[in-house]
Image 1 (cartoon, rainbow, N blue to C red):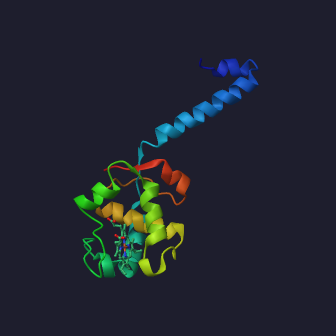
Image 2: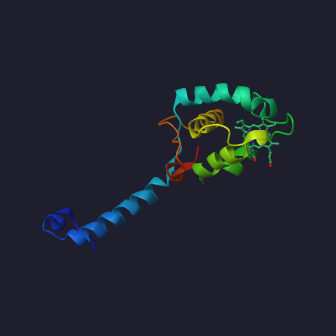
Image 3: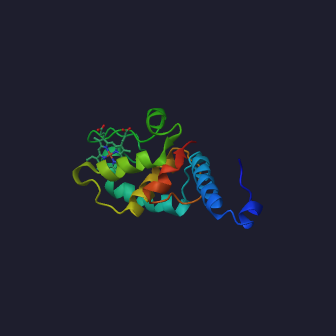
Length: 144
Ligand code: HEC
């Protein structure tokens, strides 16, 4: 049964509260289909950080191969990290594992900027800035 706004106005406060909760979680499900995007200026800041902190192993073409760094571009990378995976998974990996000698040294804002740059280089859509909190990143998917 759907509870309408008119029924709410009629005073079914408890029922309306419940309906509100359902509506919120329904929005959450819809939001989890939303593609992750980044802002251009965010990716530009990420590029500067990438070049100073990641390039020595992952290369300026993101193809990796230096000091054992994995490729961060192309089909293999996108099959592993793209294809509808939650943006939070890649964000957590970056925050918890990279750079290997001092993982987690940057702020969430900086990790989001670096991730924005990687997404940009892989042809992901530009749009709203990539968020920095894990709960919001959970609702976004990596989909080109
Ligand atoms: C000292 C070399 C080094 C530096 C610096 C470094 N990485 Fe890595 N990175 C690696 C290695 C080695 C792996 C593979 C780790 C594994 O497979 O367990 C890796 C894996 C990754 C992966 C996962 C790739 C995949 O397909 O599994 C990502 C994403 C990544 N690095 C991003 C970054 C970012 C962003 C930075 C800069 C903040 C960074 N790395 C700095 C060496 C490095």
